[in-house]
Length: 282
Image (cartoon, rainbow, N blue to C red):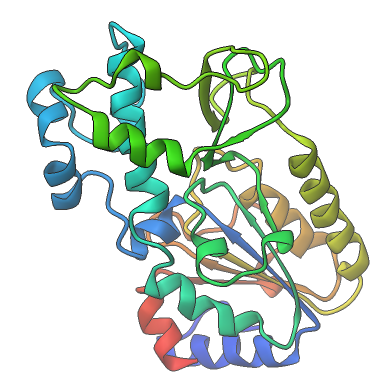
């Protein structure tokens, strides 16, 4: 496996790996969505959140999510727009659509820490995606005690339409339809995160996929995963490449391309180039 060499040599080696592998696991982090043009601190953010930037001094989508709003009406006016911006604004982006042909004709699975639903919106089968950290398309009980998630797309658009002066009407503050409890986004922030039946089903499907293919020719394609949550995908992928004899790991990461484990070199290749440029060559 070519872990060094010029760009063309590494692309040729990647092309050969994809052609010869039996199964592919795509592991994706926030860097992939950034590469796809989903910039959460740039011009789009400044345009869509102008009233919130002026009122609260927000600078980006990530830090604004932790703002201590004074009321539920303010909190949910912001979160309706946050969820729309992250999950329902664009549909599947071009880059995610272009990843799908990489796995066609193969056994494949996706594991991702992203909550933006880009794989599903780009044509990847929902039952082959394990979104470990949640999904912006759903709300959950704030306490985490009730395990039923609430699909929120209709509410998001109603709340946005009713937002005035960075607030929504009290009647639109979301509550659980069965218990009446205040809701929260289904995002892993603390121990109240709800892992519903589907979360556990997808976790088992992912682990079963690894068990079934770990002794064959398995290709791990890791996109844009840094060190915020490396124990979910980055480190396990390295351990699989080191311990499964026919497994290869290809990492696409501009900022953190290097492997952490010694002895992995023969099973590892890294790209720091633009992902679109790589796909153009495949």
